[in-house]
Image (tube, rainbow over all chains, first blue to last red; front, side, top):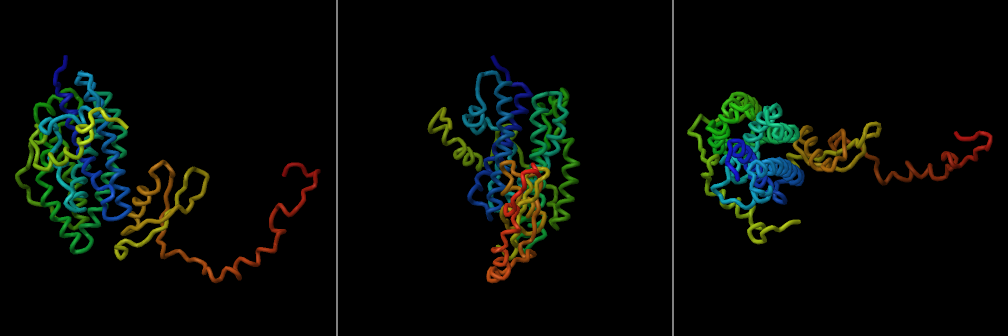
Length: 252
Length: 94
């Protein structure tokens, strides 16, 4: 017997964020603009997949249906994925990759920090390891954004464009609903909205150094947390799920 | 590309008590990005506890053509090697 508890939904959302972002970053393996980034981005992608694995394992345990981390990662339908829309946005150019990651990493860094003190021991343990990795992700992406923004005319223009396009997707990360409220009440996780101010302040500091301007507050784009995704999500899943769909149960 | 990302030499210290060893080079826009690139390229398997990066252009190297005058004179001075000397037995372990 199983029930979908708020904790299960919360862990699954977090796992999906990290899997899909990890998949997006991994797409650049062999395609990064320079050798050094070709090492750095898959490194980061592997950190994210590692975090996702730990979360899926825990989610499967909470679900209580005897499923594995792989079942959850590879064998669900698009509408069952609960990642924020931001992480499924495509790698249109290097600026998009960096901006998307920075917007998420600044959020994740604070969340992991809070989760280290979670009333849920498993999440607290996962957060301990993830915090160190995420600190590096923030460092890597913020340093890059500063160079892109304060670099050549073209890199500045592209960084600003990526920021203008991706910024509306960041709002979803901070949305509260019944699930996040239940987590907050139980002392498991902070309300996402409570993380916004510090995120916003840190982002502004980085954008100032990057000589980029923060886009005017616009309508936020959301839906991912409830399984309503953008067109690109199907393409992400097609590649992500191919092996398990074609050869069910395949292992290394 | 290299116009904006010059070459940096990377030195890694694997453990406390050992010295930094040259292990390769990376291209990067500036010092802090060079440090990050070195971390990503050369310490993925736990190779290091400390990284140095140095602009390759700042390294002063000997000219290969000068090798005879620089290094040949050392070739016939076998007495500079400790193994040249016989240690009397009475000395015991040195």
